[in-house]
Image 1 (spheres, rainbow, N blue to C red):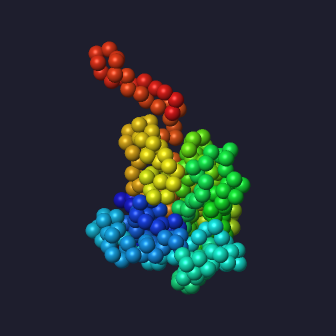
Image 2: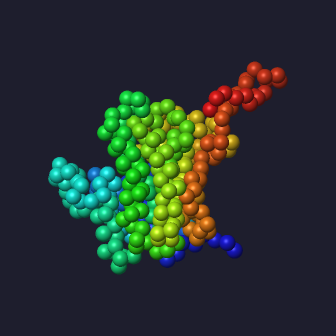
Image 3: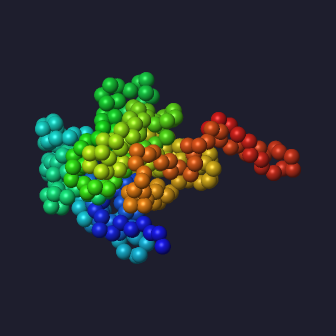
Length: 312
């Protein structure tokens, strides 16, 4: 019997601060397949996340198929805007939301992981990070700093993490990142340079596949997931409209569940996908394939609804 078995593997999911996003769902799916899972969390949200876990507020979301609760082997601070401690401005180091967490940079995370795992990197590294401070602005109105921040945190950080962790990850290890359809098509309302960041992320996935495949024997893939009403996505401002449009337009009607993306992620990170790298896999119920959106014609002959179409 073919099975997805991740027992004995250690996974690090970067970008988990609550139980609403794809990162948490992926962590749960990896654990359900047998992996030991750690997460990396944005420092200002880390304290709240720990308290929610300690008080049992997330127990319902942590439930695994066998009845046990998802537990994290480690919860690490990470702000992917910086690669090295020397890069962090004094104003951030001294900020009360940051100062108690030590080295929260990408390389600080890699060093902390190495110290906790005898120098051995994770078998699975999931990049579920994005930040577009001006995401509600049209691209033409986006500032240079806002644009560069979106690309730096949402795309370049994958390169930074691959460089920091790659040398110690075991051969055959897998990296995974999360993209969105805005990398390929215009999504009005998804601004601030985030569409550019996702396009860069997908391009980098292809190029990194060569770099880290030849250098360290690792794989890297991206999931282009449909819209989800996570807390982070609420910053977009039109996320509910995006979800409604996708649910209406997809070949398989209905909203996308986080578990559907998480299950695909677990597969791509497993030995079952050992021949897949440099790939962007759409997990959106087929939304990406549509060029027209259906409309109901309530005045059709016989009074029955007929399917018409309008531009998607």
